[in-house]
Every structure is written in C-alpha cells, then in structure tokens.
Length: 132
Figure: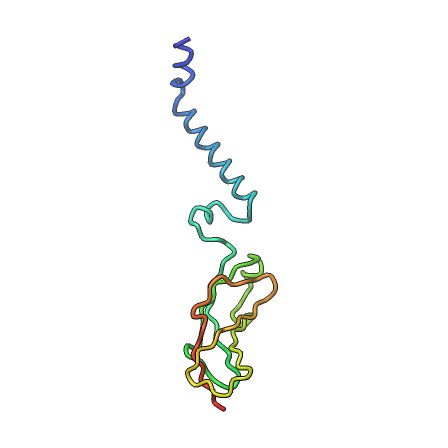
C-alpha cells in the first residue's frame, strides 16, 4: 500500500505537475472570458478594457474658463469607447441666472453619448470669466 501511494505521487511527477499547471491556466482563461469580454492579459494587468481617458475643451457660453480643458475617465460599452472621439463629448458650464462671474468657480457638466458614463472628472469646477 505504501509503494502504491508513493508511485501515485512520485512516478512521472514532473509530467503530472505540468498537466496540473496547464489545466489551471485553461480553467482561468475560460472563467475570465465567461464573465466578461476581458482577455486574460487584460485581467492580469488590471486595466479594464471598457475604460478610456480623454482631454476635452470646456465650453463657456459668452466667456472663457481656467483651465480651458478637463480630463475625463469614461466607462461603458467597449465598442462605443473604441470609436469615441473628444468631439463626441461636451463639457459645459451652466451660467443661467449669472450676471457677473469673474473668477467664480462653477461646476462642469458633461454631456455623453448613450451607453457611456464617466467615473472621474478633473477638475470638476473651473473659474469662469464672462466677456459680456
């Protein structure tokens, strides 16, 4: 009985170890692809495939802002993100009811295509100068 147990583990040990490692890699690849459209390489490096970072200009009706651009981190459908350009996104400052806004901090509003949302906006407020 002892010899049988020893042979079960020790005989062809390296071949058994290689087979186990290969089986684990195949299982991992199938499991990752089954959960999402993430490739095994993307899962290992930790960056989601459905994330994109863009810098877009801030539109201030009747004035200007400082800074003039914002950086936005987008998430959503990978097919839409792949074709997305900064021209498809609009960053605006709402000045409704504001008479004078020299240096006033105002929040930036983001207008995005359907199926896309943002997770980070830097900066989220800009200093506004009106040219009225």
